[in-house]
Image (cartoon, rainbow, N blue to C red; front, side, top):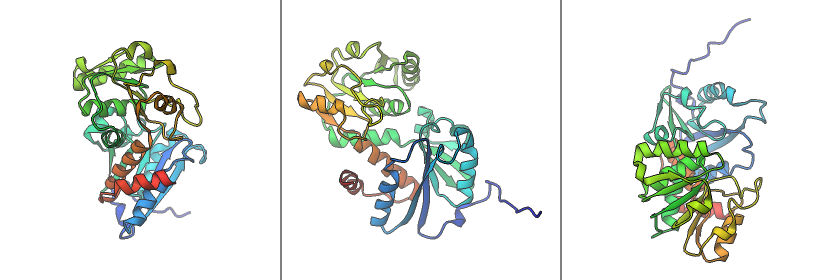
Length: 297
């Protein structure tokens, strides 16, 4: 049987893409409800770009994270401009890349991979998404002492964003103390040990706090409830949420009812997508339009 000559990944596969068209996707588990295809394709249409965004759901394909190298190679051969990656691929993808942005290296996590001239470059737009949404929706908020619940992948990105924005001190609380300590140690080295610490409980951490961030999955449709006792909330706290499905989480509802300033997770979702869109296409999208479309969907 004759064998095809399959080009290796060092050859430039971008030439397979049609002019003025972009093929991208998302690799992860349980990504069926993702709004990424809607956000990218709707904005591309508004800009006159032909963009297709494919969901590559590992369980649906009967695959797991061990297939990541095969999927990346296949995407390159098929002319993808790049892919977003989410759980459980954000760390696993790093050894398969040729380079990392400064932010991806600092976070030890990648959510956007670009294919350029035979090279795979890893970026992280999660931190940017949170920072931009926070600046837009929480102007003038005090960053004197910020408490963050959750030290997973999203938590690391959010902590990085808050510290980059100038937080004087952030306190990390996680159900896994070791995971919280890992984030504290990592960012102590980057930003200074006086600017980040861990705490055993939300009650302890919130003493003297000016703001609260939920970077846990608690509040998602699949994980309903509150990430802390609502009695710990105070009207003088601002409250930020990473969860965006639903936009109105139990935490935000409780916080608003007592008069807290709040910001939902929709902005982070949109702005991280907007930055990924810029990386994929080289075109700066209209973030305000993306926000409006996201809210109207």
